[in-house]
Length: 486
Image (cartoon, rainbow, N blue to C red; front, top):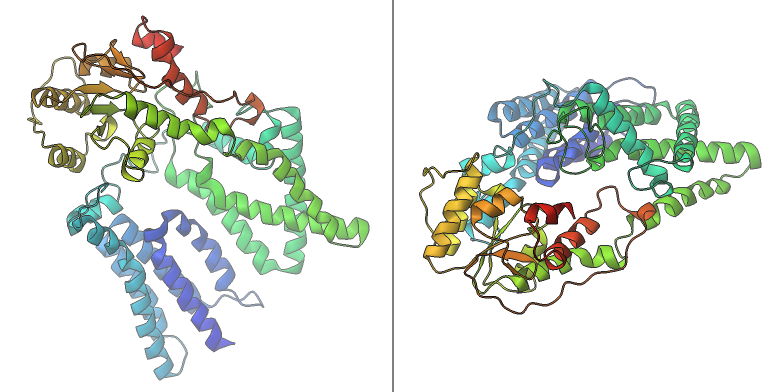
């Protein structure tokens, strides 16, 4: 009925406005939401519903981009459509006020970051202590956000990446990691056929639902690929594009909504065929077993090696670092596990972890300076450095030594960065340290059982982390570059 339908439209608008505070990928589903919620059973479009949800969509995009103009435009469209809706005047006023309040409440959820930052938490990425800093964090202005054009990889290669990720969804474990196999291709083709059968059957029984899922499939696949303009995938395109023109990891998770849409079509196809062949729907449940059997072991992170790699890596680096060391690390893999051990479990909080790839961000340099009491001239040139973060790392290392703090480097750092920092080949266990740092006993790194190649994850860093832990120990007299190749 119209009264209840209006309440659900208001709820949808609120959830859309809340999206930037949850994850912007939520907005990928909005076109499908319009296709489903703004059409009546007779497939006629409801102009108010289209305008209300579309306006909330533009409002949320403006919040995510920190564009006041875009947010204002979206709010005006939504509220104007509600004011001019064909409804009793009092009802229109109530709905308009309710919608305005819901948009404000949903969009204001990001202010939690501002409140949190002013309480000086131990980890405060972006340091959004002011409205200007909050806008920088939300709009991701410290990152190199790619425009739609020019494409950062050949369009055919971006499509190939999407096809590759789609092939992984139902039978990844039937291949050997990122490399495909006949069984995986066969499984994928079977699920493609099931999806086509399901889409045809759903369109015949519920065209509105089928159309909405088609929109979700397209916006979650082609739409996402066009908007994000990703580099070449981590495992495709070598020899076609430069080695540094690849994503740092596989990005299949960006397309999850498209895979969910196709999965719903597959389920409908399985039920359709089960009814056609046996007269009952329940045999379709057998289709569920295929991805569970194929992907369960491949995605199971409870296996010993996968479950222990991150804490082993973090604990080894922390315990092997000299007392009060300034430990320079490379990026995500050797940063987040160390933060967790320090801040959650209280392990070796005397070690200052510095992520070199974050040093270009002014807020991060200021945070390191304030927490460690170290100062350096950020405009000072450093011989041998090509990028600003390299110079900042060298200057911070000098300030650390001047303050009497040992300098250490993660084995995940490039050989050139270790050389610039003045660490290596002398070691404390798994970390590289100053030549003058006295040697000390350190625990041996753990090594779990080898995981079969056919069960490795698409973005499997377990073996890489293990090699980095053992390399300095095994090749004690080798160069760092040789160590990384090992």
